[in-house]
Image (tube, rainbow, N blue to C red; front, side, top):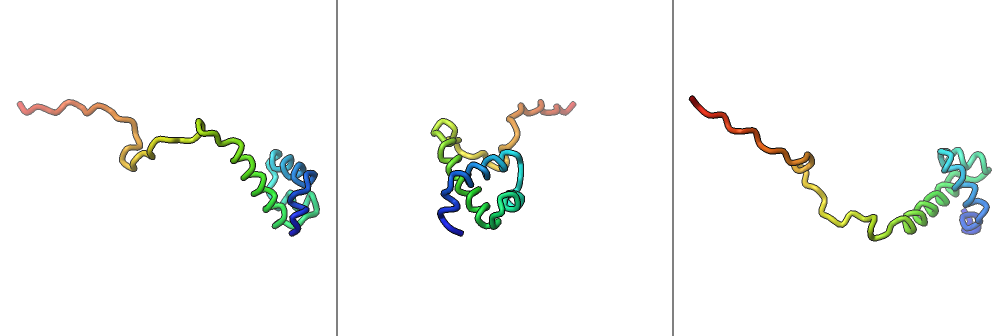
Length: 84
């Protein structure tokens, strides 16, 4: 794999368009006559770039993760049964 192939804007643009159409990296490799490993690397690079741009501080979850037992909304307890 050459770095020139990964950095070539025409390859990046073609991979981006084909991924947007829902094609797998292997299908993209066949369509562009490239090795699947090259296309997979380009897909990873594009994903990292997208994530770096899309992640602003407001988008991040800054609160603590819920505990395993705390996944359902809190509901009031039913009234206790009284003995007669």
